[in-house]
Image (cartoon, rainbow, N blue to C red; front, side, top):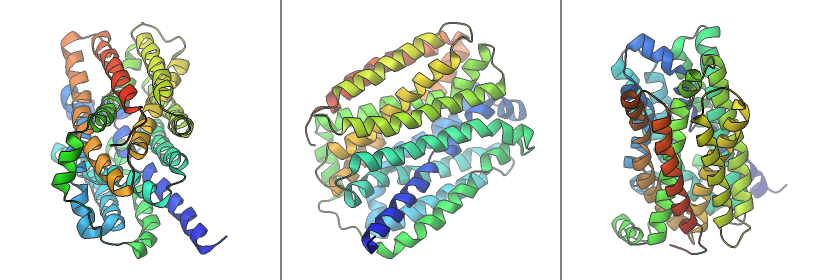
Length: 390
């Protein structure tokens, strides 16, 4: 293989390792909710904030990512993101609610930068393989989320780590990501924006297509972060043990890996992306309806379908950023604004879901809220699936 081919393979590996690290610090929280509540006495609404705060950081910081790349370059900004992520994870090991929530905000800032940068890197480095590479890194996002969900309770209880070190354990892997990305700094160049950030944001804010991409990103994230925060609690209320509920969440996100890999690779070859969106939303609606019915029958099957739908929706949201833009600069700009708008919307989800349950005391009411968002997701995804450019 040529030196350039070797470089591209190493870059794909680095992208995959980074993607693996962008979800565990969030998805590890859900299975540990009961243990954290027992130890800290926090309410369901405050516990929901442990998932909400990182997503809120995504929403606030995503749009400002170009300001970092202008000063540090894309590769330098990614390195900063990984260091911030590692620091935030380690802060949560320190006793006290201030460190728990403060570390959560900090790691959210690191993830926000990484989220925005990856689509632009793919657009620039792999312009003829966008669907494949998007599927690879979105699949690794799902693998990281699935693994962290499944091993959180065993790490805390069986290995004796306790919930704090079960959350802090993932700093080991984010440190590996730092080392994996380090060679890419040799090719770090200052990003010269073709147009001022304000002008780019103004143009995108006037694009209906950009808004639909952003709303689809928000609606799918709204559902995703609610599920990873609260699915174990919902399943335990249906009669499943805490450890089994954690593994069911792991299965859900593991099936999401298939969705994130398969759906972008399929959808990229189509004239428009309407049919993939319709298939995903039908699966999601059927899964949510089943969760409203008491009992434990077919839990694995339904959770798998829900995971495939959520993973596929996330993969489609990332693919829309790439397909609806003409170059890497536009992809970075659309990525920033869509993730800012989308994650700001999604940030309300986990705490809202917990608050609605606190009021209703039954899971059918907050699950019904998710059904409504499924139809909103179908509407925005259908529009975003039109063959056009922002």
